[in-house]
Length: 145
Ligand code: SF4
Image (cartoon, rainbow, N blue to C red; front, side):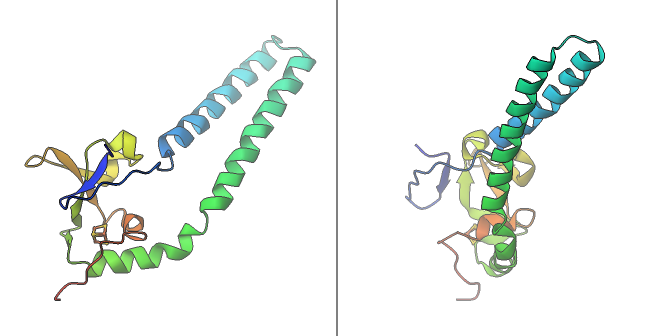
């Protein structure tokens, strides 16, 4: 079962971009840099090992740059998300009352962008903070219809 559902009987199967994986990768790169700097200053690493470490880091940076290029187009669509959030009948007080998130980690959405709904025991999406969520939403319906 998907982590992301609506009140309607709609089931979505999808593989979200795992932002948590990207964050973990950046964190591991930062930690790798700190350790490498320590190893260099303590003379614990040979030139050959250093070359290998640098090549691995360059590979990670190349992959992260590719991901960054792939998702940069989202910036052009952000105004559409803001407009949909402001005009959708399902957005109330900054929260989407249609989509529910049962497993934030599984859905790849930071809890900073969610509000826990005690009644349904699921998370609601704070679309005022995260209007990009509205960009691809096919369930948009204008207010005052
Ligand atoms: S556009 Fe979709 S995600 Fe945004 S408030 Fe409306 S129903 Fe929710």
